[in-house]
Length: 499
Length: 98
Image 1 (tube, each protein chain N blue to C red):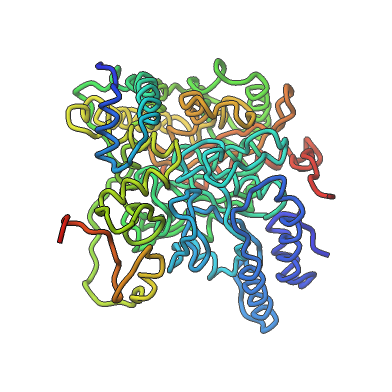
Image 2 (cartoon, rainbow over the protein chains, first blue to last red):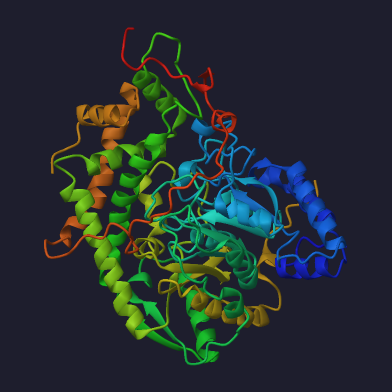
């Protein structure tokens, strides 16, 4: 019997023992999607046929005795920002409605080669600009814990799919927190790898110096298995790091933090964070101390400027990256009636195809880069980036990993912040410094806030290309929490099924 | 810092090739003003002795041999084109009247 509530590692084990087939496992997840996605709206496109055919091919290879990779036959949800050949790819935007890429992103090619079954494409804030999925041109995703709340964003569809047992694994992208924040708000594990650790080839670019692809899973080990499957050097991405992938699977299984030094960032604790969030974070730190780690307080005084710098750097890079949506070679074209010139058609198309937040950021970026303002805005933001990097470097001289809450609050209500961009931007205050410095970070669920019964995420950060460290700490803490709770955190979420 | 006028936004929208409605321009001017008010904090610490960081990695140009490899076919490349003619992308007029 298939069990959609199992972990990906358990499913892989059952597949290897031929307890059920990949086709049966895939069908069970497609059935779950059919049952609950009307409520959750995690998927923009479900590719049943493609998924079943990939599953069948894995089953045939297994029957023939071929050697398979660890995740062969495991279903996965793919954020709609990654190009998948022949499958609609919209990045949550109307400007790409109906586009079917003629090629696979490197991450997609790696997943296919590993026999992973791609169930479909998940909802997201348009071009990954947002923290709630409310900026999707195709409607918002609902948080499986409470359908009146957002799952976070921008990778909200991927996180919700995993939390609602529609898929055991998912891929997201993280530019300022877009994997870690939705993971925290839906009670699952999400990882932003070191910048350059995973290829960006075939990923619709938002802010190229910050964007990074990463895994979602319900456990630390599942995330590590997916991390290893997608990571590694790619000659098609000039910013891809040509070095061995950190041993994250080994680290996730280590279950030992004796002697490790864990730094609590003073500026990312206490005031400004929901009481129930701080409470769960502190309990988690106590468990790490019991497991033999040492807690040290560190100061990162320039983090308070990181959010402001991010909202200059990311829109600036976006205003340049999104220039490619010009209606000439692919995507939407509006107003081409034979009487208008190319630039006029371009302007009409971009007006019709981009949503409000995307236009807001393009205009902001155009302003920040324009002559006369460049030094005051973009130039100053780049200097803050240096200061944030230095804060991290100094902190990592004293500790092995750094920790903080992932978000100031638990999941917020749909509509609560959608008319106040600055309030919405604040939900990324703890995640943004990681992207600015190019290091990696994990969001680990550490319990439910007592005020509202919603999940709280602990952020664990490590130096560049030391991603194994947060898997080691995360795996150890996860095991301690599980033995304390006696059951996984997601068993507290509503069932959603049963029409 | 000068206030952002509606005309400023209209100029930016023109540079960004987005044809905004008068209503959108008004709205955007107000929002831009409030966002810039929040982000200009970066100027408090960005002193002249700090070197800017444009990228998290110390990146260098990456070179490869210039050899022909399989790539997308003409048909694949044109598969998403809004309009095509004679195996090419068909675009609106670029140079005005013919």
